[in-house]
Image (spheres, rainbow, N blue to C red):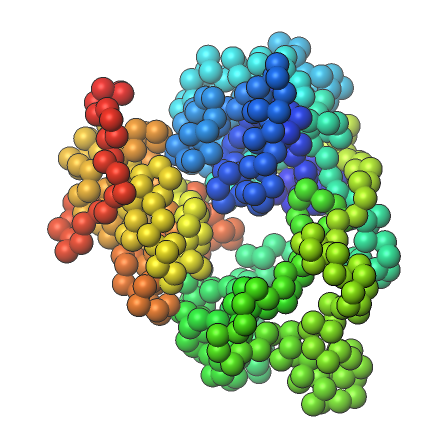
Length: 541
């Protein structure tokens, strides 16, 4: 997403989408009500978009492989194959340019030749979205400004995520909705945090991809470049990385591994020393709001006394610096992390107390940062990224998505989250794979059947969940289950979907094909409600 915004807008940052004032919203696997960048913030804007204006109810169209909770809240859901969201976006752009519907005429003129290959008919053959629907959505989007196009996790984690996100961003340019109410704008972080001087630069997004940096670090570990590794319990790479990257083997080459964690998991279990830290409800902290408030610093404070004898990672580092003395002590001169926060944000009493009551520091509204390249952008070209798996052997496209309750697996050790029904399937406690009723019938599968999900990189077991709102020939699986060392609530509940992924150059969750084989399992699929609801699926199709 950062690379796409840099290419199209000239700003390497996450934009603010003004949903509250928009009239038309295009979501490209943008599950902003569930597991997006800021679901609470955008759910509030979505509610205002739908109900705040007496004569205007914003329309929402959702493209994606699966009927998610966000897609179910849309006016129109148009299924597309995984990893094709950007192609759908260019099909819409093609119609806008061809029919002279684009508000940004100069940009449209430069793109005319580039978009020739993305006619609605050609896009239909690639994505499965009907040409007539693409044309109709393009006209409605152009004739109902201001409009917004949002890319989501599935678009960003396709075979060529930057291309797909850039294609979606292009629609905001063609619609003339950049830097306007009800459109897209970028936070002016430099202006917002100017009072922090040179440290303000630390607030900008990292110049490197997290996945690329992790791959490089694994190679260095394997080569013996590190004598010590410090792991934060907020991540669990031994679980969330494809096994073919061999993270565990690389970590074993580091002589001394220290982990800060509240719970033992697959990664911290491999540490030589585990330092217990309090949970979020027991600790002080601060963070930056990625969207919504360009100058916001959010604060959190303990709401319960620590249940065990724990100490936060900042407190441990501050104490260690004091023991070392010299330069480390000068660099971290505070008595505790709470003392650090007090001195950074105005001291106890006064502004600090008010900020804690409000939840943070929310600066006055500032003018958004200009999008330098909106008039002369460089749209990334689509590159042929290999899809892992021969279609003859692996006939279904795999669509992995974050669980609304467990996310990538970090919540799997909490029984209340395991008990929370999935909003669409109402399934709990188990791995499941969602398939279209016609696809399931062709494979001889019924709802609740046990199957083995096999990819070129691995295999796991799951239960079939029939979902009529899913693209044909797609197998969709939530992330989160399959732990082997994360407590009795999480361990042994099916396989880890991450093991189905190859160790590619990018973290592509939507670039793998799988096969489903009926398998007898000792468990069964548990649902909170009847999967067919009041009406049978056969009556809906």
